[in-house]
Length: 72
Ligand code: 9UX
Image 1 (cartoon, rainbow, N blue to C red):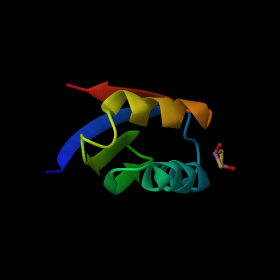
Image 2 (cartoon, rainbow, N blue to C red):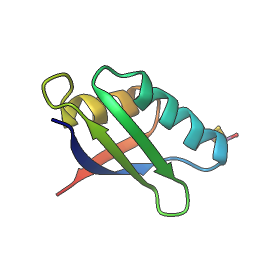
Image 3 (spheres, rainbow, N blue to C red):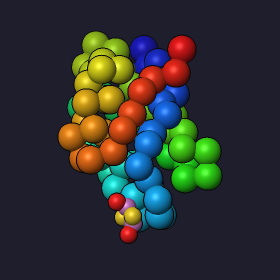
């Protein structure tokens, strides 16, 4: 069953950054959907917790040169 998590993402300064982060997220295993907003620096990810963890998601964003933390 998919869960939903919100992340605060730092370092995005243009629409291409948003596309990069969404692309990174959608390539991870276990990601059902990812939407990232530049104006709020927030990302919402729907994921299968048996395939990917919130820490994996943060790590993938940081490996791409952005900052990330999950909210609640
Ligand atoms: Mo836009 Mo983001 O030119 O790293 S792609 S700033």
